Each structure stands twice: as structure tokens, then as C-alpha cells.
Image (cartoon, rainbow, N blue to C red; front, side, top):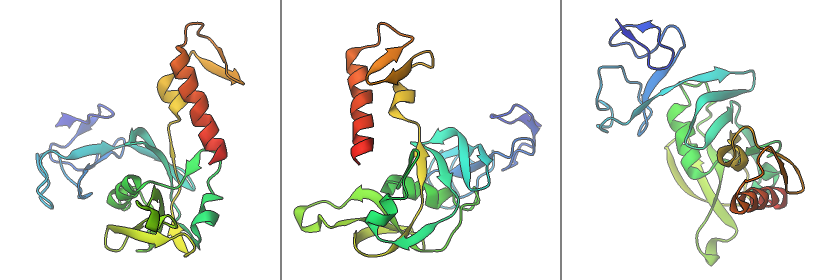
Length: 207
């Protein structure tokens, strides 16, 4: 017997799932479920590309104990289809359309985390590159696991994700913003940090 690296409770040596906390171990490259004996993925051959996933399953979303990349929460239901601009209107209260990298993560963990699957093409927030493609954005095909450009006027499905705010990443818990650029709890908060936080808030409001 050995201990789970997340909760510390006993777990079988080659177990892929901790019976106490439900943490599973997957390959970060392809999403294949691994057990503790693997130092490489038998599915794609990636060396030591794995992590434990510990999450709380709510009624309509999941929240990770430790963010995967920038992702803290994911809505379990795929939404749509609708146009890109209409999909953006659904992004409220800290939720946003995933980037292509975030969609790739959702694709890898969708089965383990119980995320709805339709094998559909989904909007991303990643803009297409080049003036000739200004009316297009990147989309992710959940059937093939590949990406491509889609016109914004078309109708696609989409997921919503939430990330830790820049403020929570930059500022200690003892420092709180009171509004209008006033910060309480730290008289020596660097001006550059204040500017970055306020600029991010401005972009979120205008976006």
C-alpha cells in the first residue's frame, strides 16, 4: 500500500483512482488514464506527462482543487449552436469562451470529469491570424480533436470556463480592492501591480 499524493490516504500501488478522494491520473498529452506504475503514457508514448485531477462536481459545473493551466471551473453542458457574438453575450460573472489551448484541455479530460460530449465544433476565443481572416476565429472539433477557422456569423456550439482572476494571482489575500483604484490592506502595493489589475478590469468591461 502507498499514500495518495493528494489526500494522503492509503491507495493500492497500481491504482488509477484514489478510493478516498476520487483523484484520477491522466496523460496531459492525450488524456489517457494512467496508473501509478506508468512513467510514460502507453497510448501516445509521452514521457512522464501526467497529473492528478482533483475536482468538485457541482450541478452545472466542475471546479478544480488546483487549476489546470488557467482553468479553474468548467460548465459541464455544451451550449449552442449560435453565432460567435451571441456566444460571447453568454459570458458573464467571470465565465469566458475558452482559448484553443483550454479547449484542448477540455477535450482530454472530458470523460474523466463528466463533461457533456456531442462530438461538435466549438467556438474558441482565439482570433484567426491575418487581415484576410478578421471575420473568423479558431474553432475546435471535438470529434477529431483538431482545430480550424470558422466565420463568426456561422453557428457553432461552445463551452464556458472560468479562471483565477489576475487580481487573485497578483495580490495577497490580505489586500483587497475597494473600488476606483483604492486598495485596502497594503500601503506599499506596487503601482505597476495596481495598473495591471485596473487595466485588466477595464479590458474585461470593454470586452
